[in-house]
Length: 408
Image: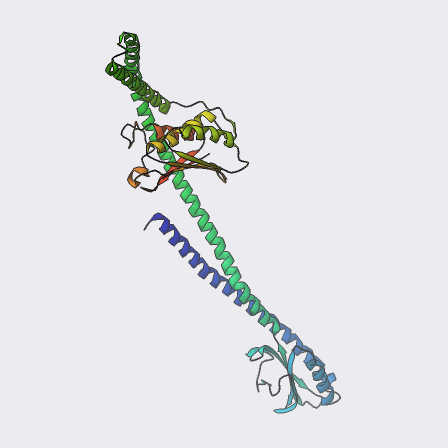
């Protein structure tokens, strides 16, 4: 399984596990709240039962009627479902807000809660005695609306809390995953820079040898040709042809040696504010001369200024445009945009593109897929962009052009 897929599966598994965990944790909390609410209600019911017992002597002093009137006053409360008065197993009085609904029990505890089609009910039962020691049993049933409301609220909040907590875990997992990817990418960049420095150290040794062994003899050769050139017959076309070829190849070797030297040395950077409109107008006129019929389009985000070294940036972009033209591109599209990480310059051509197996090595020194290429241009471009504090990346599909992205 690919690392990216493993990260997605791990994040999904962590999210699912957190949802299950938080669900049961919240469910346990909800049940604990319900149990505590019932305990408080039962305690309150016990208080009511004691009050009724203490008031029994006064209520029954004038017979059953005062007690019945007292129960009817209680029944008027909208929270009361029913009231009932029993004596010696006989129902002496009853009122119910729902006809026929009197869930009485022969032997019930002083306070009980039970579910019903009407909702949760809290019943308080009190045993009363009159002066002649006759036993009465009073039943008062209340709507236990508080518990129903708590349950409804808990059901609503249960899912919200679970999703919120799981979302936090998921965001944390995504953050850690992204941080891990950034660290891995940073490690790869450090390793790549280390390898590049090692390559450049080797190149510098080669360059020193080239400068010593080739530059001086080549310079002497060029001076010798300049002394010999006036003695050539101007009418001899073949001699003139070979003379021009000799000068051209000497100049080419000198350019290669100079580019080798540039690859191994640090470039002095002179930053300045660059107006992209004027800068790319100059570059466009220059690029269109790289290839016959090369079309260059430039799309710039308004109000964006670039802080960089004008000469070094031009050198990098000129190299990319020249490579595109030499590869056979007929069109070149340039876009400049402001991104969160900085200024982004994209250069896309409509050339033959780069094969996938070659894409990973195009910035390596001495790697070239052109017949007369030296493999220095793109390596030098990356080194300059890195010294400017940015990065350069390439993307391509064979037969569909190439795209280079510079972020500074």
